[in-house]
Length: 314
Image 1: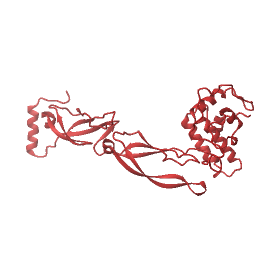
Image 2: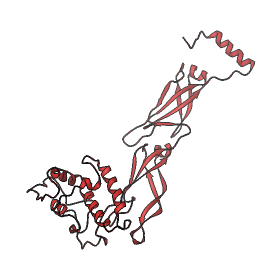
Image 3: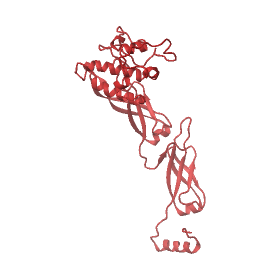
Image 4: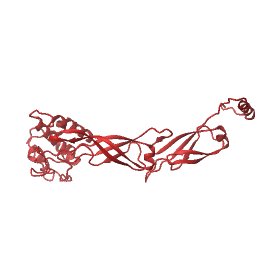
């Protein structure tokens, strides 16, 4: 039995991450798929790539493979020692390959044929290969109001589906997406089975990453909502109660007397809140000075300059 270096087959190093293992497999599978590549050797190469991915994409199988990999050399016969697979469970896999005889003796000896379907499996296609479809990652832009209250959205994606002759074609698909209350930018919504179709196997999943649309009034910092609020000098000096916008509507904000430009006030619980986490709204005061355009207004400013012994540069 010949040893096969699965890492070399996929063009990966031994410390390659699971995500990069998957990327390498997808790239090679597309290149050598028999429906795409008409080279007589493509189908055998395709099976070899699938065999390597079956092991390296499964965390437990990969651990078992790595346990003995340093002791195997090309051309060396191998018989696993008794109890070699203790602590590993290969009876249930997310994807399998029909007919273990289609794969190397090394694979069958190492894993005992477990995790495979049989040639009589009614779900196996004519090529005897079973693979789960690829996951699809996309971004969905929502408003802060969508996140604050929870919402739903209908989106249209161009999905890859299997057409006649098992050829991949692009097809528009509409999906209704529920946006849970309190979801924030960077989080993902998983739609099971809405990814790319599998090859005689289940479809992958669709992962939608949340992106916030630009808001005309607010900025956002994780769960906190930020608002710059213009106020008049007398409102800042004397104190006032002002109605300010929030994602939930207008609320009264009390401005303390003698507030300075840049003072920060908090509205507790007025940010983006979920069942377990609470956000606040922070208001930064921006004192706006009215222009003096009439003689009376100019006279008032002159009077203020005499009444106040105030130098902002001290």
